[in-house]
Length: 606
Ligand code: BGC
Image (cartoon, rainbow, N blue to C red; front, side, top):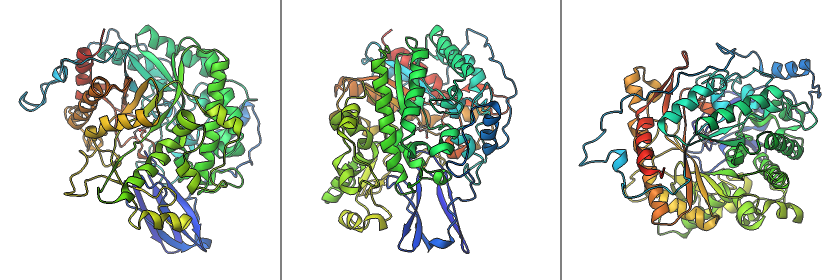
C-alpha cells in the first residue's frame, strides 16, 4: 500500500493507493479529525493529520450519488443511468471471442539461472518429493482485474469501474476498461497455460455481468450467464479445472447506490440470490467454489477513499469495516446453506488472507499478545466464526462495542459455524508482529482516539536484533510484500492448528518483480528472477509442509496468470507470470512461467 498525504491550507487531501491491506479512515476525535492508516497491519508508517473537522471534505474529490437517491429502474435506460455515474467507458478493440492457434508451442526453456553449486534447476528441487495425487497446480485471476469488456454484453457497472475514475484513486490513472481483455481472449489464455501443464485456474465471476442491477428482483443477464458457461466448458475441454469465486471485490454499483452495498443488511438476500443463480447454472461443471475473496481486505477497502462516501445510513468510516464484516459473513453462510440445500456437487469455502505472525521481540509479552491480536483481526475475524466457534474472536468482542461490530443471534451462529468444506489461504507473506509503539495497554485504553486502535499491533518487516529484512522486497507498487518463504511452514502450521480442516488450498501466492513496470525491453521484462525465486522457494516449502509437517495442502495457485489491473496501482504494478503488452494485448511467457512448468512436471503425480 502506498499512502501519502498532502495538506494544503484548509483543504485536506489524501491519496491512497488501494492495494492489499490498504485502508484509510477519517475519524472524528473531539472536534478534530484525523486521517490515519486504519489497519495496523499496513507496512506504511501511520500518518496522522489533525485539522478542524468542519474544514474536511472527505471525498478527496470523488463523487457518488447519495445512497438511496437512485430509483430502481430495471430498464435499459435505467442501466444507462447507472453507467452515467461511472462516466464514459473505453470500448475494446474487438468484441468477439478469439480462437487461438493450438496446440500452443512453448518457447525453448530459459538458460539456467544460477550455477548448480548455488541453486538447483526447478526439476532438481527436493527431487524425491511429490505433491499428493489430485493436487491442483493453479494460476489465479479475478474478473475486474483481467476481463476488460467493461460495458459489453449487458454488464452493469461495478464500484471499481467507478472508483478507477475518481481523482487520485489509481496511481497511473488507468482504468480496467480493457486491461487483458480476457473476456474475449480467455481461450488463448487457457490454451497458453494448459501448454505449461497447469491443471487449474481460479477465476472469479462478475456479479454485475449476471445481475446488472444486482438485486434479487432484477433481471438476469443471460448473455453473462452464457459467457461463463462457455468459459467453464473451454477450461474443462482444455484439461484446466475451473475454480470459481463469486465475489472478488467488484461490487455491483447499483447495490452501493440503492443501499450502501455491504454496509447494509439488505445485501445478504441479494448475494444469496446471485449465488443460487450461479450455482444452478454451473452445477456439475465447477467442483471447487469460493464465496468471497479476502473479505477482510474488501471490508477495509469499504472504509477507504474513494468508497468512503457510499455508506448505508448510520454507518461511518470507523464502523464500516465491521458492519461490512457482519453482513458479509451472513451472506457467505447464506450462500453455503443454499449450496448444500440445492445439493450442488462440489466443495465450497471463502478465501482468507494474511498470516498469524511471529513475535518481533522475545523479551516482551506485549509482542506475543500483539500476534494474537493480529491473527484475530486479520484471519480470525472470519475464520473463527466459520471454523471454530460460530462467533467473533473474543479479542474483537472485547475491543469493539456492538455499534461497531454487531453481535450474532443464536441462529446466525448456527448457520455460520461449519459453513466451509476446507480452508483457503492467500499466503503471500508472513512477518513479525509487535505491540504498537505506545504499548498495548495504552493503545487499548486510549480506544478510538488512538490511531492504532482497534487492532493495536504493528507489522515489522525486519528483525529486532540486526534489522535484517524478513525477505527480499517486491516492487515499490507492492510495499507490503516480501519473499518470506522461510516463514511459510510455520505459517501453515499455525493455520492448520488454529482453524483445523482436512484440506487446505494455498489459493494465492505471488510476487511483483521490482522495477518490472518500468522496463521497456521484452528480454529484460521476461527475466523475472525475484518472482522465480519466490515461487520456487514457496513451492519447495509447501512440499516440506506436506511431507514433513503433514499439513493437508491440496493445491497451490500463483497470482497471476497474466499481468493485470492491480487495484489502486492500476497497470503499473505487474504480478503476471506472463507479460501483457497493454497496447497489442499480446502475452509473453516470463522465466517464472517456464520454470513453474518444469517444477510441476517433475513434482506432480500424473
Ligand atoms: C488479491 C488480488 C491482488 C493480489 C496482489 C490478492 O490479495 O486477491 O486481487 O491483485 O493480492 O495484490
